[in-house]
Amino acid sequence: MATKTAMSSHSEPFNRNKLAILIGISFVIFLGIFTNYTQLQSQLRLIAERQTQGEVVDRVEVFKVNYEFVPDNFMETYKMDSVEKADYFDKILEEEMHRQHDGRKKHQNPGGLQNKSSQSTSHPKQKLPSCLQARNDTIAKSSYRKLPTPYINLGFPKMGTSTLHSFFECGGYKSTHFRCSMSMSCAKCTSQSVLHGFPPLKECIDERPSDVFAQLDNGTYFPQLELLDEFVEGYPEATFFLTFRDMEKWYHSISHWPPRKKGPHMDERWQKMNLTGLPAGIGNNVEEFSSWYCGHAERVRSLIDKNPLQTLVEIDIEDHMAGTRMAEMFGVEEQCWGHANVNANIHPELDGDEVGLAMKFHKEKRRDSKQAKQMKGSGLRAGVVHNATSNYSDDGDDGESDDDDYDNNYNEKDEQNGNDGNGLYTDQYEIENERSVSTFRNRSCFIAQKSNITKSQYGQLSTPFINLGMPKMGSSSLHKFFRCGKVQSSHYLCKGNGFDESRTCRQCIVNAIERGDPPLASCGDYDAFMQIDDGSNLPQISHLK
Image (cartoon, rainbow, N blue to C red; front, side, top):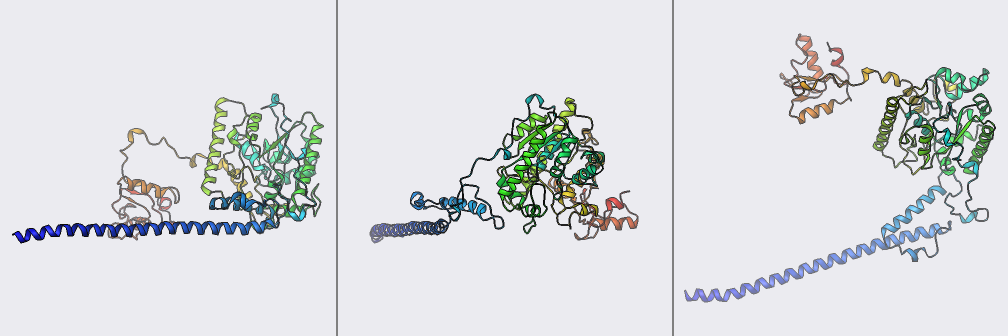
């Protein structure tokens, strides 16, 4: 007994020493790992910074050869030691290169950054001439909400035509854009009217009475140019519009429209057409197109200024106050103003869902605006037709708008033959066709009746629940809804009476009817049948009775 006690007393110090040694070894190992990890992270950061700095130095040296905007002390001043600053510099370079080297179009640097090779002939960016700036004082406030129709836009494509059209449609006006009827473009009916000895819009209004003509041209014939004198003489009390925007942005838009990457694009076609003020072969850069529009603006102002009864509304579509001014002048809600008709090829940052939401918002605002006017009895002019559709999409590009929706390959011969210009771009025809059938789409048969079920019946509706709607009209949503509520629901496939899950509901319906049974007799023990067709055969139609 005494021996065991002595051995125990000797082993306790030994165990404590052993524990202390293990703790010491563990601490040393942990310290070594932590030190190595810290050093490794520092080395990785240093490598990344030096790699980034080296890349930026290379980029700076490359761009220093051609551009003045990189200061000599750039690296010393900014000390590019972070990825954030390198990315910022990359962004500046990319933006500048986008302007300088479009890949197909070359024009003067809009940011005032001069290429060294052209220093001898380049000049600082000067103030815009008055012919390229909208005048905001052409309409007296006493005339607000009293401006007479028709409203005729004399501006050019990609300068707000769709924006004007959507704005007035949203406000309850009858507006046309590109097509003045199902059978004729505005360009065609205006030229025919003049040919027959009438004012330009005579045959257009006969076909389709309208208050607003937001786009007169068809891309090859420009009534706002060729028939300007006839418009001014034929409508002595009309309200004319002249739209403006930044010339660099306008040139960028017309040189990328229609939105196909290989072209031909709008500017290339105009160079070959020998248009009034733009002879064939002219229009190779932004300066030549700016000069063309400047001449048009001066001509419009000169003609309208001679007639005191005519009104000229000038709008810079990129002015953040444009919507407010238009709302005040015409009594339309400001929310109705917005850039319309986006070119996805030059605005890839736009998300399809965002565009869809913008379209929905715009249509709702237009509907609310119409209802408010009707309730207040604000007295819209006789003949104003409420159109139920709109071609609207959020531009989302910091003020750059692309406001036209036609293909310049269109011509009058194509129109007569019933096509749109060799089939290259059909969106405009489809859009106008959609607008023209809007009355048909608003019939009561296309609107859900919400009053056919009384609240006293809620929670007491008898089964089976059978969906008689068509595919892609919510069948899956209904199916998921009932299954979520613990209701036995089928969708497309019906399992029952010895059939496996590969049996479609349509098959069991047809088999039951052939046997003389009720349609769902052999389709399984379900309380809800949310899709009874198979996509090719529709029992909800063929066997509805």
